Image (cartoon, rainbow, N blue to C red; front, side):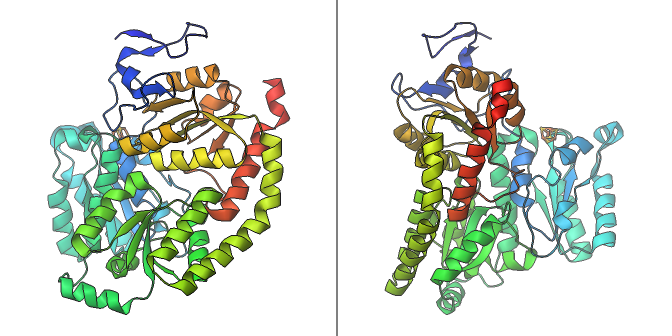
Length: 462
Ligand code: SF4
């Protein structure tokens, strides 16, 4: 493994990244801005990415009345237990984590019997309508037939038991997103799939949409639901925050799919357009500008003046309520520098805009699963000298945060210790946070959190 390349020649040459990673890292204004992305991680380079199984689990876990059974060693289930702080308005079944706890003996002789036993026990204990059975690395190696076991048990119990093909060797975390979407598509299947039936059902619906890629962390989906309700639009199903079996079955009633988390849900939206004729649009409710634009675009879709007027009224009211507070934060935070390392490219784009709204310059931005078009937009938004990187490892994050003198890192649970070890403020924009960051209220929460951590006196003593 060659270790040579360095982006910033003006600084110390002590640290560097491995040569194989050079195409996945660029600096705005210094090199071609396109970074290599959507590829598997480089062997030998410890990636911040989670595994395929984890990608599938984070997408499906918020389905509240489902049993989530992980077929694999106990650690896979533990690693993803209650992984999202998703809230439920009904069942709490999803907050358990079930595992077949495979041992050496199962690896040698096969784990299908153990899986059947686990399904029997869970059906007996919880009487679920829906069960997901996740494949993990070891299942991919020994070749247990998940499809056959799930089919057999589905027929036996008359419930939906869906195999999730998420063993670790089929790609990166994004492959897990697709496996989750494929599992959802198996549930959605409406009773009647003829195009005539779909047209008739839709003509009876009035301004009903599905909200894709919101996991109802700290009630975020409910906040957006409130805004849309006020302007006259109902959310049919949220994928997957606070979703349940009955709701998923009605997914084809929607006239439009809107997508917040593009990385995980664009595939599902495309499939629903192809199969059921439901158009989709990407939106973002992170930050004031994106929230306003998204509400306007959704309202505009329905081509109704009254609806568009209500949208403007809501925007004016919400904006005026928070303008003073945000202005104060902007003054306090002027000149601070932020580094971003998040899961998807769409979130990174919104965060760059949101940091600009509160007077903070973004000096490093990276994602785990960003796509080419998202990195193009990131490169357009970034200022000269900003480091852009895909599928980074901790060493690279440390190197660029130090070189760029970032005051703050925004990321997920795996990035928190890194920030604190470097004596840099941290914001959790992932599963663990307890307050909403979406919509107008979320923009204020974000600014408040940024201010309290960046301006904390603790950094003087580190
Ligand atoms: S063993 Fe495989 S599936 Fe389980 S957590 Fe590790 S990488 Fe993911």
